[in-house]
Image (cartoon, rainbow, N blue to C red):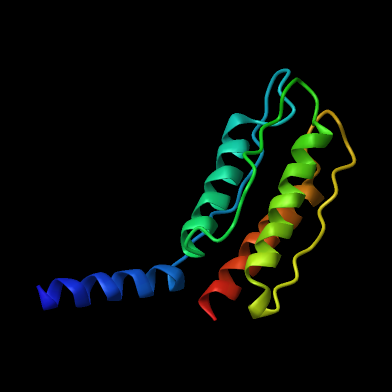
Length: 127
């Protein structure tokens, strides 16, 4: 029983150090400005951060409705990144504000900015 408790303690302690947030890429085709795989990747990464911070964050589920990039989708991602900064404020984490300037697809600069933020969060959680 003692070994089991020690093993569980080790697993929970090392879970934060092993946070992996994959880069998200928008592979939209046809009338969809934002692919389902991009939306899933973003939401999965925010859920992983929530688990790593032991549920101390409140993330919105971000989905793009319609065949154009929704302002609400971009705002949702931005709000979630602000929530990450708040929950990891003791680690002096400052994330970029990502802007999208097209309505027919996600800008390369937007997806690069979001992916850069994932890397920053990984580094903050590891340290």
